[in-house]
Image 1 (cartoon, rainbow, N blue to C red):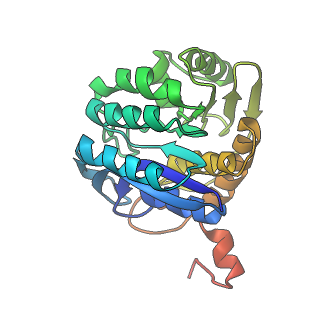
Image 2 (tube, helix red, strand yellow; image 1 turned 90 degrees about the vertical axis):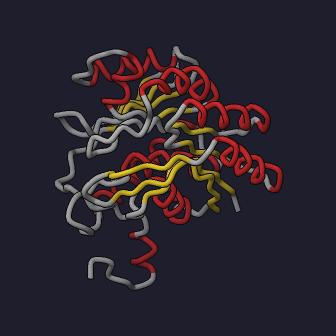
Length: 269
């Protein structure tokens, strides 16, 4: 079985972060391992507090995993400080993993900053060049490039700028667009638009974490960057269509809907 590692924060409501990553790995047939970078106090209404892990224990978690087993892909999510980024970059440089997916988690849907402002440059200069693909949404792509992104052509221009920073490929996600939720993939050679009509649901908690983990899963299973993104787009679309009405706010996507169906469980009950 292919083995994947997620390096990210924990979500107490279970819809995003480490919890979303491991559910996605399970759904897509890979074995999931995890390094926790932070513990968040959050629910479907918002993020209320964050406690970072210290850099030393983050580095030790990573080193323990790689020292013991082969890792087929790595997904990096919430890395809130420069110290944490330095620790991750140091360990990944040592182990030189393949198939690294970077999800530049910056701001929660409720507006809580999950990446400190002074850590953005460290993410761009230390983690981004190590990644095979980065998966920013439109606000994150704006932060990375300094652009104002308003449509598909702006997304393409931002994708070019991001690849020029040293990453092999990028998918700029269109969920924050005022138009349909079309994503733009670029690998330095070709653009691929991934169109999708906007799904009428408020329950999109964990969408970005899930999408990036799906890309990592397919890369770990041996697919090309482009094919991994295409398959991950299909997976996240179905997960959003089958999102869960949990909590008082923005509920989670349906990571495991296919497993529930195969087990004869009506997960909406």
